[in-house]
Length: 401
Image (cartoon, rainbow, N blue to C red; front, side, top):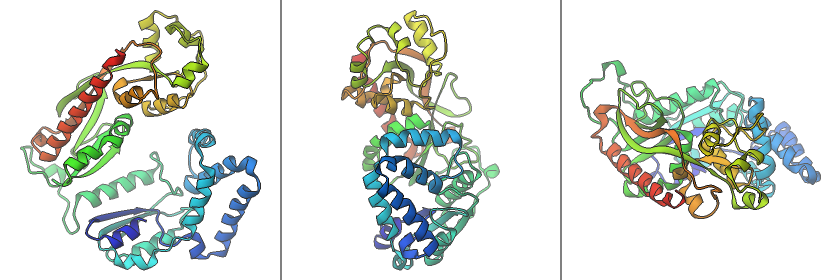
């Protein structure tokens, strides 16, 4: 789809990045061996309806991220059992098998980066090389990986992000400038029409469905959101600004306060209906809790004067608040959530708070960036929009205070 769109709309696409891509689906590639094993997998799913979800789930693991850790596989299988849209997936697999945009390759005018895993089992390396060879001037990069979907903890991901950021941050033919030679005094923005924002996964998850208003107000800005909990090195990375949280105010950078973190217990209305005995905070000990190892649970027991559970509860460990909230909305238990991030879900009743107390999360969120960038128009525009978004969300959550 990306290839066809770029070919047919050259005025709208300046740069094109393709990862583990192909111009011809597996039926069009017509490799007898590949067709045979793919047809076998599909036929098993057609003939064994009671096992469709598990078979399709295993097929996707094998094809898309075969080097996944056991914990990721278990997480995938658990959610696939609940969310796997089997009928639609079979249709999508069949549709993808007949894709053929080989004639469109020569029509692409955008500067193009093609990255491909050397052992990709879903789209062979030769398919990626065919894409790169068909687009004039395309750069082809081989990634040492077997995953069709790159995983964040594999070396190939780091290599891809370096290639991607170099490609996006340095126009074709422009030599890279050494960061060591960069002057300390305020300097002009080398990419005034491109904004790269790093942020905690939960913050980026919150921003993403709302970012349209910012883009509508600033059509001249191309935006990249990078969900990452790690600290940004502004000297060596192309990130323009970062949304960060913590207990200690950052030093060595310009800091804008966004909001103070607090949290409350939340669950779905359906979960609350299934647990009518959840009447007091002490009852939280006896109901399923999401990410029970979260340190915030200790603050809950302290705040309400409840004796902590005698032994660790077995429960779903999600690892990020955005996943905790999704699990809570699906009725899997009670989660500890920052109301600001879930203001719409609370207002619409998809999440409810059995107890109104908002507990101090002992931290803050900030927008940070190097001091010399504080007057860059794109950062000023993003800062104004983000602070307004935080204030609007905070106002909407006062009803549960």
